[in-house]
Amino acid sequence: MIVAATSDIHSPIYYESFVKATDMMHVKPDVFLFAGDVVDRGNVDEYQKILNALFGKINCPIVACFGNSEFGKENIEKIKEKYRQVIFLEDETILLNIGEKNVGIVGSKGSLDRPTYWQSKNIPNIEEEYASRIEKIKKLLLEIRSEIKILLLHYTPTYKILEGENPNIYPELGSKKMEDVLLATRPNLVVCGHSHKGKKQVWIDGIPIFNVSFPLNEKIVIIDTEKDLKYGLGKFF
Image 1 (cartoon, one colour):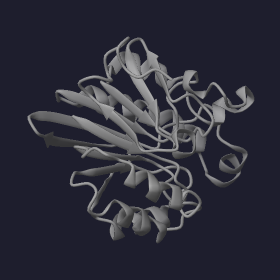
Image 2: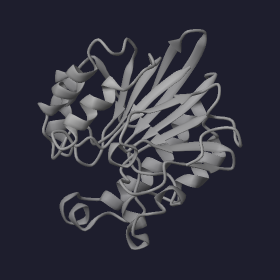
Image 3: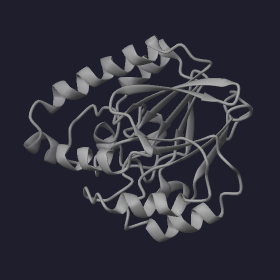
């Protein structure tokens, strides 16, 4: 199965580069994943431009989670209502039959170990929300019964993939606590974003984690589940 994935396009900021990247995508993916921050600052209409760039280039399900830049409950609801061709997951699961494979995808914004200053001032009970989300994600992953289990997040589920970022802000970029969830549930593939300067891939006890952030990769990340998910034989960056 071929997975195409990206995040942090922050359209219109990286829109032109994203369009060029779609032209360079010389495979036909079986599923396309957006790991959040597709648009910048809650700009709902920019999502249409991104989907237009993919028109005629893919013929597969599009699954997405939201990032911190798609902020505001009203904006999120507008995006979900307007772009129904995308399967948006907010602490939810979708089961897909792709070829002969049964694929389960859990999608979530993810969690931070420390809310940003803005979040702590503007989002009530944000610490409790992040803590409860970790448990929700774990429960969803444990409940999946599928041949391939994918976890789609915006925030990174380990600090290991943040190498290259300022260590002082690691807790505001991801959650080290999520590592325990990965070890307990063992997804076949983890896709995340948010970090623009981190590593492109790491392994946690044989579990592959891909940071598909567009500013970091400067391309759409292509993952072959038959080749790239085998520890010691996959992609190393």
